[in-house]
Image (cartoon, rainbow, N blue to C red; front, top):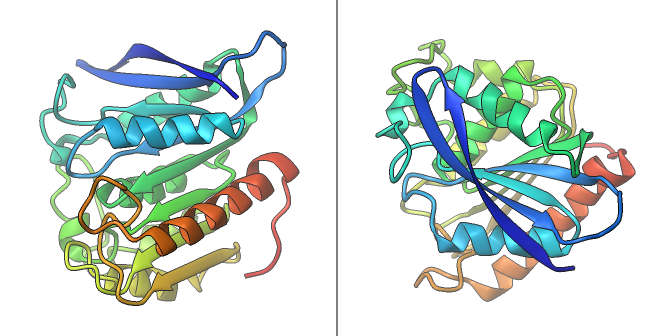
Length: 243
């Protein structure tokens, strides 16, 4: 399926935040499931747009906000505001080509942590895909200026998440250690929602980007297959089984 990319601006308070829609190129009146995608600390790059293009070819409409840095008037990831997340979600669901009842979240690295935060605020989210997310390490959340956490348990907010989760992490990750996902998995057990955690021995951070020296073709292939199966269940079939 072909796609086209549309550049947009989103207003969150006094901040103008750019973003990109990757939308199926179709003459039909069909509405597509939607994905809100969060980049990591390295910022929004060509690899994220290419990833969205791959998803769009599978029938998903994607919104990629440049949630900080670059052309965004949010200069640093510390400036993220809960209202930003609600504006991104509203923008995704208001796109006429998207079925607002079939939308999910996806994030990479620090963006994986942001996807989890967003899901705790947005009960309509159908699922979360978390690639090597920065979550359990206290500095992953402690330095956000506009967010409040339980300093005794930075992951206590996950009990407010009501949708399924898929997490994938390299066990040799030296940028965001796999302990982030181990601890997230432990905290998630307090929830009643489904979760699936996959760990890849000997695999490092950013293993899904072909242009990255840490790219791992086997782990990438397995992770993407898991992602597509998960998204099909939560966004299309609307049914997910067990933990």
